[in-house]
Length: 280
Image 1 (cartoon, helix red, strand yellow):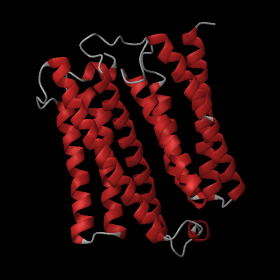
Image 2 (cartoon, one colour; image 1 turned 90 degrees about the horizontal axis):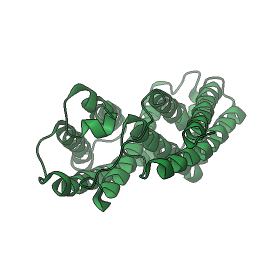
Image 3 (spheres, helix red, strand yellow; image 1 turned 180 degrees about the horizontal axis):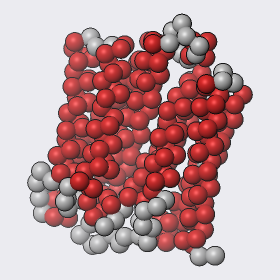
Image 4 (tube, one colour; image 1 turned 60 degrees about the horizontal axis):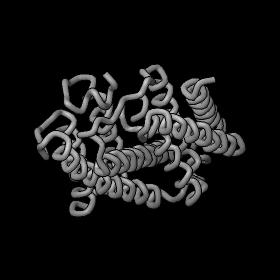
């Protein structure tokens, strides 16, 4: 069996475990089965093992970390998102229902990436830079933080809407609304800083690779727009007192913009970044 075959087999194992985690999370949440929710967490976290090994095999095979092409970019983002879920549950075990949101997103994204080209792209001399590693690392940190913040904000809104409904008992086991709201805020604050570092390090890398710091390339522009949207969120929260429902709605509305900036822009626009993100 070739290294590529082994990599793909392990990646499909991760997809399967993430799918199982998604199904178990939803089942445990809807039918109020704590043991099923616990099993969902284990299935999801076990999925990290084949996923990490597959990334390691690919790293050796293509000679660089997972940051070129749709398949690699999404794979790296998904493993960061699932790790973030694990860290949240380590600190707040009662946040199990957040997996109902994070795991289906992770499963669908990784599953979609499996149909993208997997041949591997070479990092040319002008692109190979320490700043590229910094740029990509902080991109994954920021996007995984925003996904987790989105999930927490959505749970906040669900509990507020269904306070006296059929899911009230299960939702009542979450940390207090104030804690959920504060966690979402802290994750957005961290993601905002990480995204700023991603943009700044990307500009330095672009100057090394292409001889300019900023050229209003679509990827650059939409990354800046995403950063400004979260800047508005932080401004409204810290200076205007936006908390609770209003802050949660803004956190939920902001994520589709980030996803579009990451995945949609390279597809819709011709961009110097696009070839390295889509693999085309």
